[in-house]
Amino acid sequence: MSYLESLNAANRIIEAQNGAWNGIDGESVARMKLQNRFRTGLDIAKYTAKIMRGDMAAYDKNAANYTQSLGCWHGFIGQQKMIAIKKHFGETKGKYLYLSGWMVAALRSEFGPLPDQSMHEKTSVPALIEELYTFLRQADARELSLLFRDIDKAREAGDQVREKQLLTQVDNFQTHVVPIIADIDAGFGNAEATYLLAKKMIEAGACALQIENQVSDEKQCGHQDGKVTVPHEDFIAKIRACRYAFLELGVDDGIIVARTDSLGAGLTKQIAYSAEPGDLGDQYNSFLDCEEIEASEIGNGDVLINRRGKFLRPKRLRSNLYQFRSGTGEDRCVLDCITSLQHGADLLWIETEKPHVEQIAGMVDRIREVIPNAKLVYNNSPSFNWTLNFRQQVFDAWKAEGKDVAAYNRDKLMSVDYDDTELALEADRRIQTFQADASKRAGIFHHLITLPTYHTAALSTDNLAKRYFGEEAMLGYVKNVQREEIRQGIACVKHQNMSGSDIGDDHKEYFAGEAALKAGGKDNTMNQFAAAS
Image (cartoon, rainbow, N blue to C red; front, side):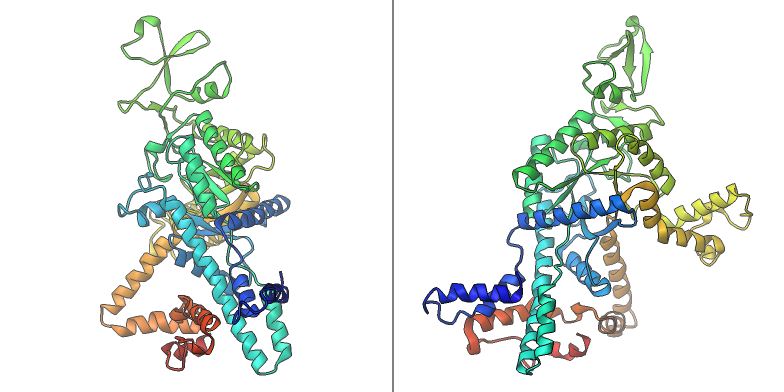
């Protein structure tokens, strides 16, 4: 609905009251409605799911249409990210939010900082989704408020051309609300628990849920050791639970991202049920590390598998976990991906130990033999040492090509001594093009960094503390923070405006008219930053 249509609709409602709503202004109502386009989290989930589905279709036509996101651990961080994107690129197309279970555990749990092992309160996940969208909706209201004020100024000046331009901007306003891919970990329990949590996350606004095939009560970070997977049927049940949650809530386009940790997981908690040779359970069990034994060798408490008339004893650890054969990770990973897509998942996530295009592509090629349009979400993880990994990849490639690499020590390529070398520059070029290269070659539809704002917060705080508490004192803040905010046009330099002060003033005027006591008068120190608008 356009600005004028919304205004006319509001006026009709008010006029129908025959003067009973004295003092209610139709234009103020229209503005408030436009500032609050999304009424509920479900409105957001339905809206963003359609965006993401459209982006997936665009990627299928051209792999250059990949999408990206950054993980955000607070609503303010997500808000500032989207404000920055609109400022620098003029639109938000193809740019999402990511909610990392790692960051929820480390930063948002009432227990305090926790490792990524699903020990945090499950309710903290939908709470963060709701918080992120609250801040994004406030960013909409703030930006529209600034446009409305400019409209009023244009009218006061009698500038109809400027007024028309501003009304067009309002009618074509692009919301800060974008899709969020939200981490549900391993579902925080059985399939029913997964379903209940999925509903809460969707109701908070999530259009895409990422779920992994680890055991809930043994969950580990994908980049740490000790990962334990579940049989396919168990994981498929949780995928179905997420799909039922989407459909029950009317988010028919909801997206499920199925993550497999099999590449780095060497253990399983249970032997899969198998009804006949070659079924899914039998395929899962075929990867177990077993030894063939005779009936006379069966020991107390042994668990056996009967395969083609032979007794096989799976290797069982003191933890009562079963071990997979070494070197089967990639085969298990490919089977996980195919079965997930065949049972309701939309996108895949393969957790790898390094960012290597050909390693990822090798698995995707096999998956696409069965599912031709298989697509990945990929974690451009801060757990990778990107500098060392790519310098070593270049070193190995050059060595294989017969190029002289005698000037380089492969094990010490992280050293600053190599920063300006030909090898380091080539490695940086490959890092820069990694996302485009991997999307084209390895089927990656969405690139994300799970924990970037965790690291940026730590780095910027360290730099400020070093300067402010050191010899620079107040100059450490002014020179490196406020002065840069002003010169780079960072909206937060007007922190009162960013927190909603001007929106509050607008409302006071709507409610009380000329009697409104507003904060934005001539003595407001925020006026010192007028030139920074």
